[in-house]
Length: 210
Image (cartoon, rainbow, N blue to C red; front, side, top):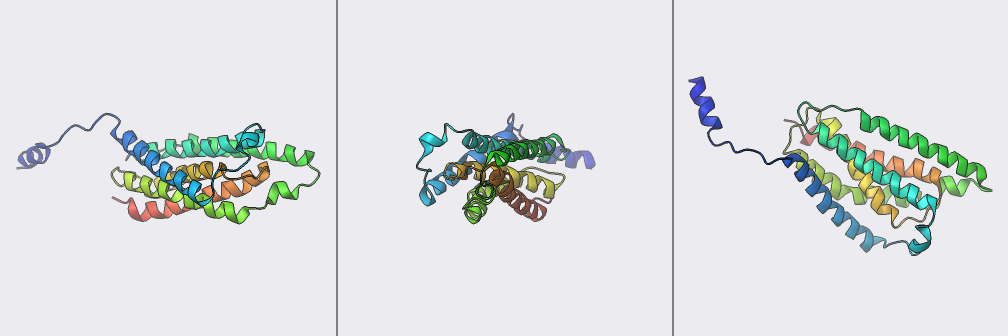
């Protein structure tokens, strides 16, 4: 009886395409990232001094820091999407990147005549608003993709997806942001990414259970 039931349940099984999970998540990230980029161009536009900005270390630090968190979140999400998934290295590397950025920020502050503009900038609220806004399409697409997978820890998988989305949103926002303070980047960009990570954890807890 049991053997017959198993045979019937498995009769119509089809092999899963190679790297199907990665393809699904990459596709979701690509499409939602394009939507977020279009939203940024429509709402803010590229910073007008891009030709000058791209010659500065601050710009490329902002570019690399946010992109790194998007990729670390993606790496963690791919592992945590599996029933047996667990990983530590993306989180450790993320903390290491933040520590390194703080070192650069302290050096920049030590050389500055006026520290406060490099810390507080002039667009904290703007960054804390637009980074989550641009991250939202990516987060929703990632959650939808993860619902077709089987994460053992839905909350942590949602958090990883949120960090991926937050990093992507911050990277896209960086093309419109003219802040030059590395401490601004370390404090407010990181806070915005963590906020999106927290939102992902909440969504994951309720939407990714199986």
